[in-house]
Structures are given as structure tokens and as C-alpha cells.
Length: 280
Ligand SMILES: NC(=O)C1=CN([C@@H]2O[C@H](COP(=O)(O)OP(=O)(O)OC[C@H]3O[C@@H](n4cnc5c(N)ncnc54)[C@H](OP(=O)(O)O)[C@@H]3O)[C@@H](O)[C@H]2O)C=CC1
Ligand SMILES: O=C1CO[C@H](CO)[C@@H](O)[C@@H]1O
Image (cartoon, rainbow, N blue to C red; front, side, top):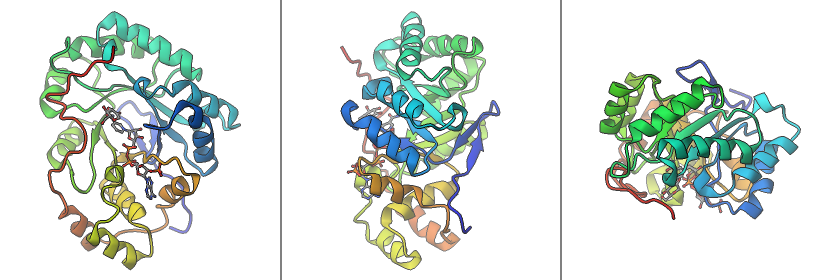
């Protein structure tokens, strides 16, 4: 474990995804290109963006200008909540593709199920069509609960490659992660350090002192050892580099179990069963 190489996982269609990526939520468009270039310089090879974040164009510019071969960088984007209608979804894929300007997008997600807005099954069929046409290398979902996935799996052909859900030590999502795994769906954990809420945790601080790492690094390492994909966000190149230096140490089973015991059913973001927000 001397080096710090980022491992990849295989999605259910055989496409490889780096287990660590760089999150770009709340990075302003004007700051995004520099932040993504710094992340790529630090060794990240996976960027998570969304139409909702308003920074796809700048993510694409950074990847294109980085000098790194296109097939060495994995880029995810997400369909915005106002594009669930199938025709709008097809148009949204075209707009994301144009904004990123990187050729086929590596992974494209339905950002939220929006259970009371249209029907996510129809939205998914539109993404299945774009996937079959080669416009998207992989397709997945985000914030889908078990009930949403069950309906999708029963009514459509392509099994989502990932389900990107809120998960961190205070909201561990154990049953949903198990369901994902049993169906060949990779779990991606958003807000892996709980948007900073775990940083003052005394148990995590104790473990950090034991392994000589920061609380953020210990928390991110715990996710990696659970087998999930993560993409912490930082606007600071120093913290982004810190967050990527997690592949040259390990947590013991006992240390991981102490983190497992922090689960507190503490959701930070919206509840996917009731979140039906659509931007104007
Ligand atoms: N699918 C979905 O619905 C959602 C997806 N996401 C995705 O997940 C990504 C990650 O989630 P996010 O909500 O950003 O939350 P994170 O858990 O990644 O936390 C980000 C916050 O932690 C701070 N931070 C990061 N690294 C460190 C560090 N080493 N030490 C101290 N503070 C640190 C950042 O501040 P600073 O920038 O100042 O370092 C920022 O305030 C998003 O960027 C986005 O790509 C997020 C939310 C919802
Ligand atoms: O990706 C996202 C960033 O955070 C927002 C607020 O929690 C979410 O709505 C959105 O899904």
C-alpha cells in the first residue's frame, strides 16, 4: 500500500469507474475550471457534475484543457428535475453533451425520482434509448429509494449502473446499499463527509489520531472500504489533495466498526419520497 493509486470498480456493463472522484456541487461556474484542473493535477480522474449545478461547461473545458487523454477521465452528469418528460430528457442529454463537449458522457443519472412529477419509468426509458444509441456510456439513478428501484427494475430493460444516494457516518443507508448490491447496482455516496458535519466528531477524531490522518481522510477511507464510490467536494486545492490521499493506509475492522456505530438516521438533504421540486 505504498503508493496512492485510485482503484476502479466495474459497473454492471463492464465500464470501469474510479472509486474516488471530485464533486462539484456549489462550485460557482467561474471557479469550476480552476478547481477541476487542480483536482486533475492532484490525480483525480472522475468528476461529478449535474445540469442543476450550472457548471457542466466549465467541467468540460477543464477536462479538455488538462492534457489528459479523454478516456482516462470519467465524467458524470445528471438530468435536471425539469426534464423528466421523455422528450425533454432527450433534449437534456443533447444539452449536457454539448455543454461538456467530451463526446459520449460516461455516466448520466436521473437526479431525483420526483415521485409526484410525471413518471420516472418513462424518463428512464428515454435514457435507455440514448444509451442504446451510444450517446451515453452508462446510465444510472440518484436518490432512488428501494420502492422506486423495484418499480424501475420491474418495468424496464437496463439495470441502473449506479444509485447515487446521501450516505455518511451519520446516515449509513445500510438496507438500501444492500439492495443496490444485490441487484448489481454500485452505490455512490453523496456528501461523504456530511458536508462537513462529521469533522468535529470525537470518535472520528480519536481514530484519526490513531492512524495519523485527518478526520476527512478517515471518513473517506471508511466509505472506500465499504466498497462505495465517493466524490468529496472541495474548493480548496489543498483539501482536495488531502481527500485523495486515502489509498496508502487502512482502517482495521475494529476501527470501521466504531464508525459503523455512529449511524444516527440523520439525513441532511431532501427526502426522496417527498422531494418534488422542479426548477422554473
Ligand atoms: N445526487 C445528489 O442529489 C447530490 C450529489 N452531490 C454530489 O456529491 C458531492 C459531494 O457532496 P457535497 O454535498 O459537496 O458534500 P461533502 O460531504 O463532499 O462536503 C463538502 C464540504 O466539506 C468541506 N470539505 C471538503 N474536504 C474537506 C477537508 N478535507 N477538510 C475540511 N473540510 C472539507 C468543503 O468545504 P471547502 O470547499 O471549503 O473545502 C464543503 O463545505 C457534490 O459535490 C456533488 O457532486 C451532493 C449533493 C446531492
Ligand atoms: O445534487 C444536489 C445538491 O444538493 C441539493 C440540496 O441538497 C440537492 O437538491 C441536489 O440533488
